[in-house]
Image (cartoon, rainbow, N blue to C red; front, side, top):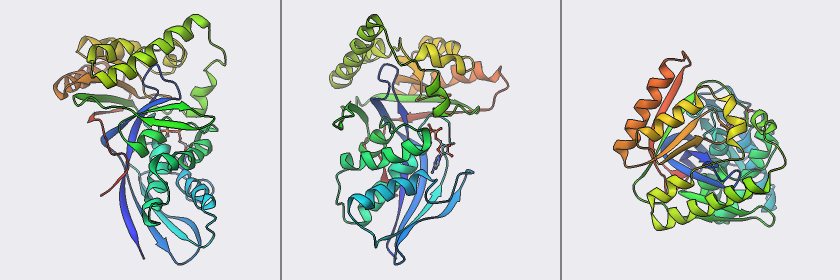
Length: 307
Ligand code: ADP
């Protein structure tokens, strides 16, 4: 039986101004998966450790994503067995479901001799996201598959690109252990935006992309601003404003909601600043009595990889 073990990375979606289109991939925070080819046709979840998630193939995002991948190949004979070792909690806002979908399709592609490019795998992994949240968004699965920072330029037709990663960027993430389901936090988002807010938002998206390419850390910081989603969603996250303010006072370039929350991210120049930011986040959350995890992570340029 041919088998590979992969690291399925956590990701931060939206990055303040880029709701549903921007995301970035983290190093050192993520799940592990073992994917094997089997002589018995069909897709099975054979092991799931570290979380209480469905093992039925039609309810787990990993197997659902692979089903779409094999269907695109008109493949009805391949057997796939999936073991998931969860380290990222579901509903944390750092792409738990995306890590499983992306890890599974990437590993199956590898086992089948790479019939798809990483960008071509994104739509299959998005079907896992459709199962998890009711919406086939790509802002977590794209960075998990391509690595670094990614931009979904268009959903119809689908067009995703990998952006430049400035070498000195570090992410600090605090995950308060309260569950905010993506499907719930989507409900607070309004369907319409004002032209004034849209202008501010697309100015910041352009600024952030330009800042990533020119490695202009101040421009990155100025562009990490969200006038559309954050004001609505941040009320679901205890101490959001305090954490954001303290992070920036400790030297972070900017901070915001990671994906749909409740995790809060801050981007900093250099590991030392990112560690200082972690300390200030910790001080604030210690007073709440809410259990939390904090990660300081470099940006992962590779995405899913064999370990
Ligand atoms: P996150 O933003 O951290 O991915 P979501 O709330 O979007 O969290 O998705 C988690 C949902 O997806 C849960 O309802 C969970 O039961 C479901 N799910 C199904 N399979 C998996 C999996 N392999 N990993 C994580 N979540 C999964």
